[in-house]
Image (tube, rainbow, N blue to C red):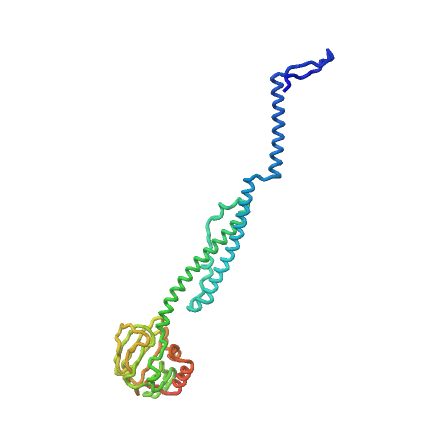
Length: 323
């Protein structure tokens, strides 16, 4: 670096050497530093504007990856929503119909979540709306699943009760077909054999030889055992639960006791002619929710369609009951 600079001397009409002072060196340094800074700034700005750093490229790849994952999650959440909705639809339209249950309440299937903004910590970012939407849909699916699990718990309980109910419904004839002489009288208005007046016959009369086995028509508990000289004579009442009760009257022999649990098909007594009766037969009644109903409509476990039709014909052929 030159240690001198030249300065024109107008008096001598010539240039003369003037040595650099420290101020000159300082100003020169400031100029060079300023120039270098400007050049560096321009270079860095140009590089950042037109070129990417390795770190930036890595961050951009990561952002692209996360965006793809969010899109994939949206698609998977949509599939889950469809599956949950299909399960709920089958639950209401099929499973609950099978068990005779009401549809699961809509307000329980889609429970809301009140309170403060649960997504507050996610706000303020570039992808906030997309992330919040996905989180909300996931939360909705979770609530639906919780509701569906509760619905299934009810169905499991209904299934357990249904099995017990199916075993308890009086669903067979109390006397075997091969033991029957005939069905003397069915449910409906008949002429009473003793009083000779038209009277509602609230059961069915199965005529069979004295001593013929009588079967419990469904699972239950014996709640009444009577041995009367008139009326139903020797008779038994079985409480089946689920609103069902059956009566077996005019027995010659009772083989059960009060409080005894019985199974469908178990022999509970023998056909007889006790009480107000004009011949050996079994008077059988079915009571549903406190109301006597036609027993013929409950023989679906051991009768074919043709047998059922013939049974109804025989039950309605006689205009007189046996009791």
